[in-house]
Amino acid sequence: MAIVCKSTSEIEKMRRSGHIVRQVLDHVKTLVAPSVTTMDLERTAEKMIKDLGAKPAFKGYYDYPCVLCTSVNEEIVHGIPSEKRVLKEGDIVSIDCGVVLDGYYGDAAITVPVGNGLKPELQKLLEVTEASLYRGIEQARIGNSVGDVGAAVQEHVEAAGFSVVREFVGHGIGTRLHEEPQVPNFGNRGHGARLREGMVIAIEPMVNSGKPETRVLGDKWTAVTADGSFSAHFEHCVAVTKDGPVILTQ
Image (cartoon, rainbow, N blue to C red; front, side, top):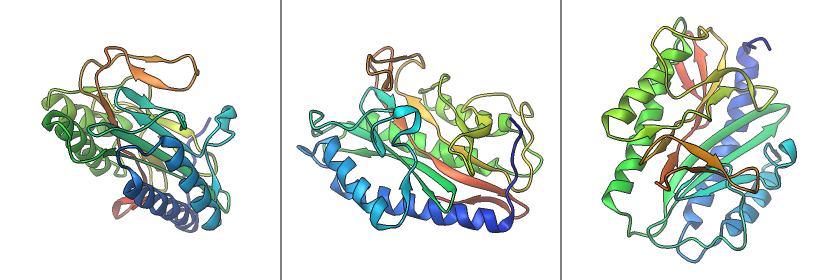
């Protein structure tokens, strides 16, 4: 598949879908608390997406059943919201949301502590993962490569003693949820697809407190750390412009 560069007006449409994603995440984040279920978050997000005039990007995508992915503790990505998954003090939950509006997609993720009893090493995991996202975004410039983005993320994560997931990567985004190029959170500077004006990429570090290896549970969706260590996930959609990287999911 070819890489699709977007016009200024297309990027503006993506900014609108990105803005809806951000509104949903900002609201759902305020509901995260001990004794709340991940299905409680799902129901709120589904209603909000509808009320804001968008459609969910994930629900029905390869038969995925929900509008959010809610991944708790050792779950990395693609955790399915459930009435049975009750959040507890000291947990962390990654919330990934995507919408489509006027044919253009937005996609973003955050990881949120549950309650106030977060262990210092988990607080550090969240801070390092989020900071690594912005290191990657800083490299999303015309003439750079996806390897520059991935290397910036990887260097920051590994310097802090954490590891980057290899099996799941960022991606181009536009009139489809997943477009070329793939955007790994690791790599070598100068390698991989060149970034051109008008490209829009979803940069999404998935960072484990232990080793990088993963496995997928029997539900065929939920990816977890192979060693049971905790994992964090942050994501933004970023346009490559002549003025530098522009975050569309602010």
